[in-house]
Image 1: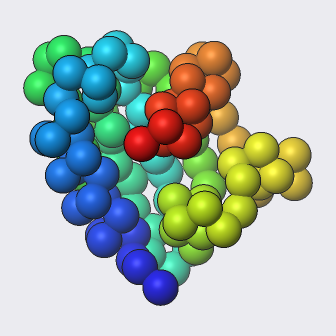
Image 2 (image 1 turned 120 degrees about the horizontal axis):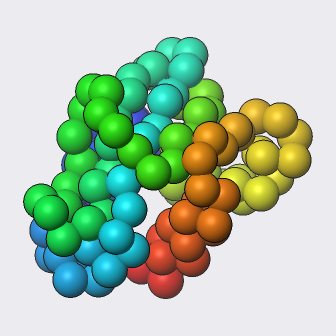
Length: 108
């Protein structure tokens, strides 16, 4: 089972490889992960220095979820909608941006 770190490293590599596609969303996403493996990171998908950065920063959309559920979601074992409707995933900010991120990840 991959760790949060493994997924962040994989995301950073994908952004570096597909910089134009990644920055096309034009948004910053903050993930606040709770529980074992807890951390906060920002997924910057703007033309201004796209990438993954650990720590607090401004974001257009904040997603709060348990670290274990984040890993399961990233591995395709559970759908983000199921987590959302079960109250295990919360979105603050622009819900439309959260849906755009889901579509982008699905097409990767």
